[in-house]
Amino acid sequence: MIVHDHKPATFVAASLLALGLLLGTGAPGRAEDATSAPASAPARTVWLAQDGNESQYPTRALTIAGFLREHEPAIGGDDYVSAPLDSALYEGMHVEYRPAVSVILFDGDKQRELRSSAASVEALLASLNVKLGPSDEIAPSLDARLLPNAVVRIVRVKTWIAKMLKTIPQPVRRREVASLERRTSRVIDPGAPGRREIVVRFTQRGNESPQRTTLGSRVLRAPHPKIVAVGSAALDFADVARDRFAIAMHIAGSAVQMVATAYVAGCYGCSGITALGLPAGHGIVAVDPSFIPLGTKLYVPGYGRAVAGDTGAAIKGRRIDLGFNSLAAALQFGRRQIKVYVLR
Image 1 (cartoon, one colour):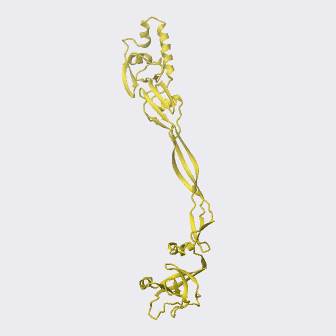
Image 2 (image 1 turned 180 degrees about the vertical axis):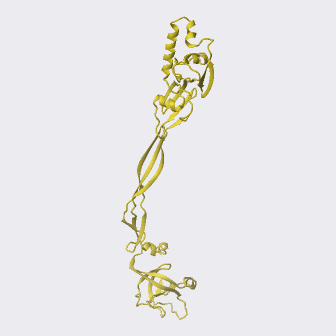
Image 3 (image 1 turned 90 degrees about the vertical axis):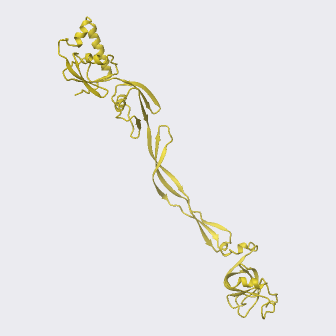
């Protein structure tokens, strides 16, 4: 079984130095005697693990240093050996050797060039006491084997949660008010905008702009609608808006729903002169004097200004007969329900 005691790299150099001093104190021929058994002695079988592969080799070397010299003549001070170099060999021993390789480490904005005999990227970071945050990214992966001329990149990822406030626009509601003139409005209640709390997660990779993800939201204060009063006359006078006299008109406050018919001055039995002595025609209407006094000024949508200037046997109560200058115009108007306005 391979011994994974992970001796520091400096131990390799120290062991080699000690071995060199030992060899240098005697005659040149004694070096072979110190590291190898006599040629007549039986060879031992030793397992050597390198680059992830393990193979067995026969050797007459007495120590690990002598055995490695047979396979790795130049052992560097940063290389890894699983046991001290002066350890005595025995039959079936397992030795792991891992040469140091050149590595470039990018940690955020910092760059570092070094040599390491770490077995993996994770072991490299541990040897340098480099710690990763829970969201940090690294390439290659932690379990990747550390290859020669490896480039290891660490991207520091920051993550934080923030609560943000957002205004909720207030709705506008319009309310008809009969006391306001048409085309006029007034704010009854200014209302107030609402407020919403939004929980956002920000994620920043290195020096990039933070990316935001909405995690949830809740309404802290519902918006209060703005109430605007609108003069109801703007709706009552849909037809008046098309009349050039509508702007100057003032409603006395009474609007009467009536049944309107039409007549012409040349009808059978008509004299052409109204009850007020005015010539019949457009603008002169017949009413029930007990309901609308003669001489009252009126406005009839779709007809225009008028004067209650005539009467009729069939015109009783909420009936009104509109005078026209032509039979065609009278027939076109026909009979309809209208709202009659009494003018000041």
